[in-house]
Each structure stands twice: as structure tokens, then as C-alpha cells.
Image (cartoon, rainbow, N blue to C red; front, top):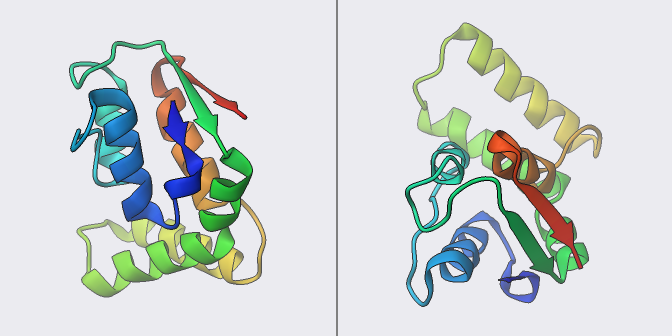
Length: 123
């Protein structure tokens, strides 16, 4: 079970997710891309699976528009290797998130988990 009460940002999500799947100190991604890789199997769980997310409402707030804006801005500042379409998408995400519109970081996480038919059960 994923313990949402420990999730304050993206880093703490990955820590909590790794421990929920693979025990203390466990790994289950460090970025949205690696989370999606882990969700296709071979990292402690085989799809499809259910993530039971205890305290999901608090995590939804912590991983909301502000968190998405910070994530997108950080990727742009780092100069992550993106093509022009990727940069435009990231800029659009940052702009929407800054206005409190569109998807949130929580939504992107749920989408990544669902890559092979897995689901999130919010509690």
C-alpha cells in the first residue's frame, strides 16, 4: 500500500512508491519515464496491478499544479534533451499549471502507472 501521508513532492513519491512495492529502501523509479518503465514489469511487480494509495487526497494536493509547474520548469532549466515538440509540450504544461489549469503531476503519475492496464485505487 502506498502511504500518501509521506508524499510531499515528487522525490518523496518515488521513495514511498519504491518502499510500497519493494520494501524499505526499495526502488520503483526516479522520474516519470523510469516509473513508466518499472510499471511494465521486472522491478518487483508484474502488470496489471493495483496501487492502493492510502491518503491519496493529500498526495493529490502535494502533487498538484504547483508541483507540475516546478517539475516542468526544472526540466526546462536543466536543458533535458527534448526535441522541439517536447519543449513546446513542456512549456504548455508549465503555463497551464501556473494558471492552475489542466492536468496535475498526480494525474501524470496515475497515467504512468496505467501504462499496461494497472490502476490506482484512491483511499
